[in-house]
Length: 602
Image (spheres, one colour):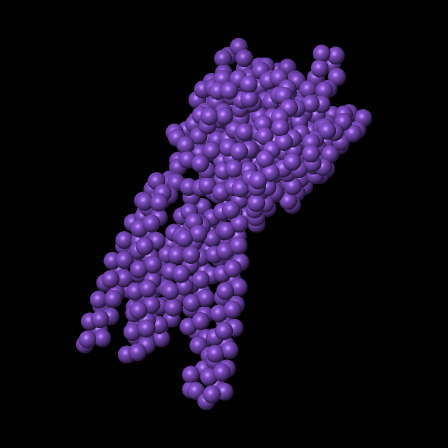
């Protein structure tokens, strides 16, 4: 009678604890619920629409496996010949056509979208380097002094002028990682990456790692920069560092994939950009930076971003330089990390676009906040008065400069073993230096040091828990063998060890399957599973004991993650939700262990 009464009390306590633990889950789920909205264009005066939309060109994204015969067949049905967008299009599946007089855009798009071989079709849109930047380049900055060598800093003589790297805690990150092994695609005006018939390598890129790229403008394998924007962006990510020359790059051991999609005047088409995104995803890029934009969403670009995201690519984009509300495209697509810009004082830059899609802020420069040193300094090429490209150090400003800071930190995170783009985003947002409001700064200003450390902790702790379980089994086996040799009737406690190991490893397995930002992790990391089994009728002593050991493993795992700051939840879940949830689960976990141990002694 007393045993039944004690068991009933334990079950009531467990049920109450589970109810308390479930409340933060429900609150967090509700707080993070975001209604999906279809992409909508920004406001563009009717007189300027032709600046962004080609009136008689249509682009087509074919489904995988569609070849030349299908292209000819579909063109015959429309009465208009289709052509591949580039020599790479048999691989990427993108074609274009020019509509003749009498064939309306709407009817052509309707016919294309109805064809089962077509994944997406749209009019051709134009995207470009943000106009504010192109019209307002800052002058070359003056040389600085060599940095203080107290802690590890690169020996680049002008590193002291890179206030932006200090803002994002670059030196803290460099103590952990420098981005080695991660390929970052710079989809832009090209990069001054090598000496070719089309251009030369910039002086401070001679030790930068490059991989094969492509020029979607000239349709060749020489994506040299003839504008300057793309090289500047690539420099923020991985300019040669600690080489006694110029300035530093933030993820300087990463590898740059130069993809030229914008012309010498900084303008390109949605078909070329979509093709570059797909090609980058298929050829080893793990991070894509796009410091370009326009006011119109494009179906092929959105489809390409979805494709790259599914292949595990983190896509980072400039929010835009409108100086008002309204994030441009592709930044506003949900697969992309939209970045706004701040100046030297940490406040939103005067030119930065802002809106609900902004995920993070980063240094982009602001000459109004600091007229003399407010820009982002990197090595690049600019066209001189005689028309030739001049290789020098220039300070630019724009969300174009903010975006590569985040792309570089994403590379640092990926180099620590975090590969899923949603997990990369979650780490970047969870570790950001808090700044409000969210529609201007997102989760805050990116923090390279904290992001690199958290990424390393998440990956390293998972590995440590695995080897802890291996050691646990080995130790228990050794104890069992010693008991047998001593003549004890107690052998190897396999099932109890297995239950404890399951509690320690199950949350990691679920996180690997569900993703780090899934709210189902709040269930998988809680005591809901063994608690529910007990409440629903675990009558036997062995069952209760095994559930108790499993609950202990879950409680230890959760406490470990909480103390290390690695609980896999999205950035929208605050400490006021997480702390009571963790406390309730740990208390219930030890209560279940007590119940199991009590049962084993009865």
